[in-house]
Image 1 (cartoon, helix red, strand yellow):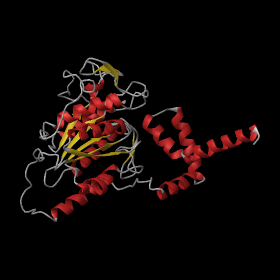
Image 2 (image 1 turned 90 degrees about the vertical axis):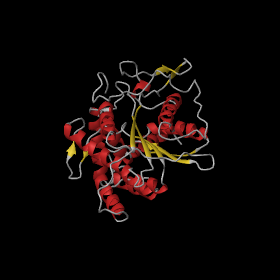
Image 3 (image 1 turned 30 degrees about the vertical axis):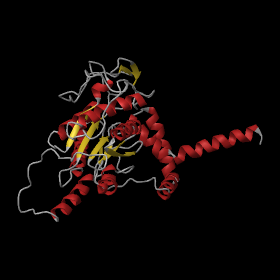
Image 4 (image 1 turned 180 degrees about the vertical axis):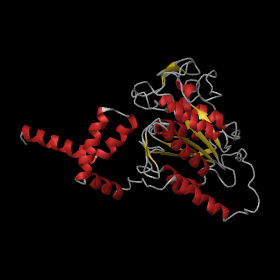
Length: 351
């Protein structure tokens, strides 16, 4: 084939791909708030919608089982769950005050059902968590991460619905969950109103979704513990926004729900002033790289560091003495690195 024709084919393929992926490109641009790039992505998406190219892509995704977003609101799911529970229990008496869940001590013969999931940060963190949990010999882990997802865009992937339909029926005893990295973008309410990122209305709407999702995860028998891991500090200029404010929402909502235990990952990836660091010492004193080049995702080292810290926190609620919990000094964080006792809604210098 002549070189000129090869070039034409390549360019034509790139153009077709650009329009087929217009919706995904716009969604990622919205999440980062990319200014002029967002304007370009919006125009491409408009053209794709006009010629129904986006529709073609959605139909293909649906046929392949990739399009799992719906417009079912988390509050609707919670109401349905409550109605089902009321039909199975005596509702003549006031429900007891919530208390810390009781998790039976696992053994090698009766392993604890463990689930870890969330957005793309959970890809590396979750893989590490899975390996760490497996090493105990008394826990059976399941990893469930979805790239470019969160609570902001249920039309792309509806996490609350997925949890209710696909995760909770397996009755996990301990869940580790992380959202946030993709949620710093505009949201559309159930009434069609668009909430601008960072505004009070936006924060209120996000808080509503978080609170309802946390309530969805409560087991009627109170024998499920959920570790809600706040996303780590992001590198300035990474394009990921509002992590400190989202962490404040997670922390403050978890305080009134004993079955939800908030884990503060921020200090494990920041300096003494709460600012982003790409490298930090492990428990053996060796300095290692904790993040990937984008300043958002964790490296394998960072994933191991966070996993051992989360497992140490889980041990406060679950007796793992029948297993083996020996964090290697070159993977675990130093003992001096601990969670904050208060989560501020804003960290100076953070995005």
